[in-house]
View 1: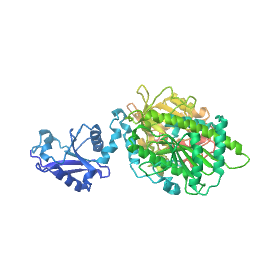
View 2: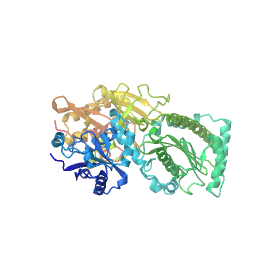
View 3: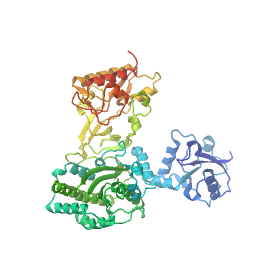
View 4: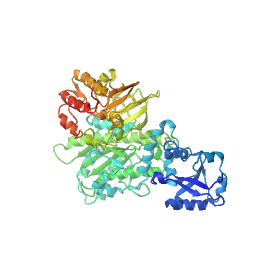
Amino acid sequence: MERKYLWCYFFIEKIPTHSRSVVIQYSPMEHLAFTRHNIAELVDLPQTHFQLYKPKVRIPLLTEGSLFEKIEDVIVRGDSLEVLKGGALQSTFWSAELSSMEEEVACFDILVIPDRVLEALKPIAGLPDSLRSRRDVIKARCRVLANSIASPPQAGADPQSHFGDSMIVAGRPLYRYHLPTAIYSPELAKLTERFSHLAEVKATPERVRQAAVLVSLGAEIYSEEEERENALRDHLDQIFGPADWGTSVNGGAATPAAVWGLAMVLEIKNEKGVGGNPQLQAFFSRLHIVQGSKKDGKFLTSNFPCIILSISSTLFEVSLAVMTQALMVDDVFRADIRGGLYLEHDAITLARALTVIADGLEDLKEYYTKVYSHDADKHADYLYPNPVCQDTLQPPSYGPLTFLEKLPASTVLPDDVADRGQSTADRFEYSMALFRATMPDGTVVMVKFTPSYNAESHRLLAIEGLAPKLLHHTRIAGGWLVIVMEDLDRAQNALTYLDNSPTLRLPRSVYDDVQRALKKLHEKKLVFGDLRIQNIMVQGDGDSVDRIKTYLVDFDWCGIEGEARYPIFMSQLKVYWDAGMLPYEKMLMCHDQELLKVLKGFCDTA
């Protein structure tokens, strides 16, 4: 059969799915340079910004699953593509007659791939199939830092516009918070723990004298910001070692007041409220530093843990940051020191903080020396948690865990049910703390990070088969807990089951099992608390149609009746209010019973 057409696929996400596949006329004597010109006109692409490739493997037009993902696999493998050079003829690559295989199944002949896409896919090129689930996170991080970043002075002068920037997660608004930076960096974990126990830190007499000078300089009145910076420069160099002052980064896009390599950045303002917010300015300076590291070829090695200092006259602030899909920031120290009754006490407190910072700076310098002596981390472990135990600052004995993926908020808190009074428009995208991971022996587990957890309640129900098996729970640096439990790989959220049920009802067995679980807890005077459909997992029970296995999950709130209290910032759901559950009120077993009545309304009758 004579070849008449060539099938092209545009590997460009912004093009609608239905418009990515196009057909062009086959002209055997046409130069590919002209073909390229015609293709560029189809989607208005600059000819210098994309390449044409012939896939060496067959990619049927009707591919099972995601065609985009299939082609991404081909691109990532690299050796599965052949560059179509402009000087060649179409007949060089495609014969005038279709082969028998081509007659049988139509396949793509040309892949149109922008240069920027090829560059963006390099970080996932070495990722093994077992870690395929990490692809989206790696690509998302690359996309973030491919974007334009506001200038630090502009950001500092306009915090209303820039604290909510998608590149920064720093607790403003309240829902834009994240897992502690200590979970992602052992070096920051050590810093966090020392700041948490600052009164126990020993400061030498010399360090106290250095703090006293810093306090005096902060309280001085200077007419210009530059004058204050000059006064601080030598003294800060004496405390922390020589810094690069006023050195531009990221090709001149930002000029922090000072940087100590990649380990620490400083911004200074002459007076509080004058000239902008130095802390926010420092956050954006850090973004520019990280973006600049991409140009230096250092981007694929680290989550860039660092210390961020900001000084505004008498105000000293210390933050810790890591770069995952956004710059995640924790504030660990703040002191506003002026003359007064507590001056000496405050100076000693500052001396302790300076001691912690100086020690942490050395740890980070050592970290970066090690990181950059190795090639890029092709597994991108730096984008995932690396927790250490609070008491030893060493990894948990059952580790290391290999994190496969972070479950999105919609997986845990479906957001299509607000009208049922059973969910909330939670927007805690970065603070969602549930991961799928593997143990050293390859066992797949669920891993949760949480500030509080009732392991006793979890174990009590797990023994009865009413909760996933609790494998480990460990207090980690930063004060949070890491909970490792069995992965219910065949289970699904009860809400998902409900929405897909032909009857739009849950089996009566779900209600019976939850009632039994509450009875077990209440016998121990334990209140479950957050008994919503989202916190119930279900899975088929053999051949039984009218019975499914039921598991309670999420024991974060669970506590003793009359002693434990509901979270201060609990979601304001009607179902909570109707049950009598209010922020910071005492938890009562009758609240569980009220929520059980709500669940009963979603289940089949007996």
